[in-house]
Image (cartoon, rainbow, N blue to C red; front, side, top):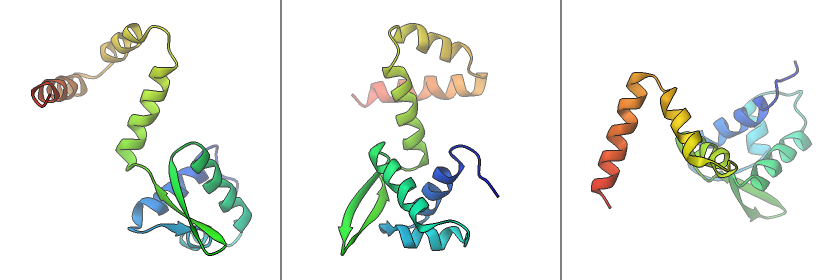
Length: 120
């Protein structure tokens, strides 16, 4: 069965988020439980995620062990920030983003901004 774009990356990240310690490609492949998935494919996915700054890695013998840089919420925030950083008119993008939020999300954002200001 062929996975959709980004689906294997998401599955690999899910495996790593479940662990309290770094994992090797062999560990990840075993946890994925897909015997048809080549070891080299898992190594490639881990390497790409490392190049994107999503994972850190440390040498363990002749291989690397990987760990996520952020939890799922942190990763989503990093992605949002990357999109915003590539825009020329940040204020316009932020205004459009906020204007399209459902009322509950808008209220949550407002509360977060107010509580953050109190912590500065």
